[in-house]
Length: 121
Length: 171
Picture 1 (cartoon, rainbow over the protein chains, first blue to last red):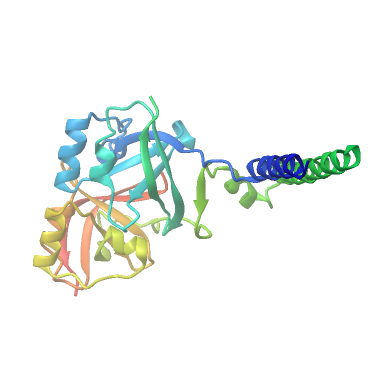
Picture 2: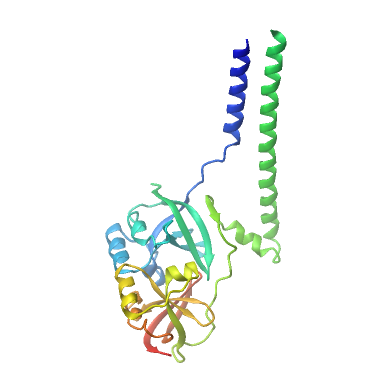
């Protein structure tokens, strides 16, 4: 009898704890872009090879969300504080890229400290 | 036997009830915040709430966003933009390292980005006249405390760009 009660209580507590747990964070969706192309009036879209080449040369590879006037450019950093251009370049062939991380804005720059970067295709 | 079963059943029911109450509060709180934003769209005074609406899902905001520093409306093709060469990551951390020419060249070789910081604190991305990124060109002037850049400016995506026609020491 006591066992039944204990099991029922355990199930109840477990269910309650599951319902109260925080939902997994949703990634911010966008595209990998070349800042050079964006500033020249392009869409910023580049392929993986070009993005890697640009990142190696020190040209900014950025993350862009939204379209048109609502588009926002993010400079992506790794958790250790290093610029994530090279890491981001690996996802340049993906149509949609998702990033989970933290955002801050400094001197007008949108900074995204990435925890995870993943393809959303 | 029946009593104990009834008591345990009641306990589970209370747990579920408490849980659902918590969720209702969360929902109402999010609805309230949505309401504020929608009302903000009709008022100019609540422009900041509109900006909060721009914040994408799944990200944590670390700091209150300062406004973007727009360049002063000067013609930098005639009067040089007086600025300091800084690493983009230093502009992000706020801890500016003193650069030398060799260290700046080494940083650019590592793929790090050099930008300039105007006297009003605005960050400019420097491009060469041919449209290539000017980080490496800037590195050659890193020994100077201040440099002057002549060139056309652009303000796009809340970012400042300058297409350098001429760079000189401005110490």
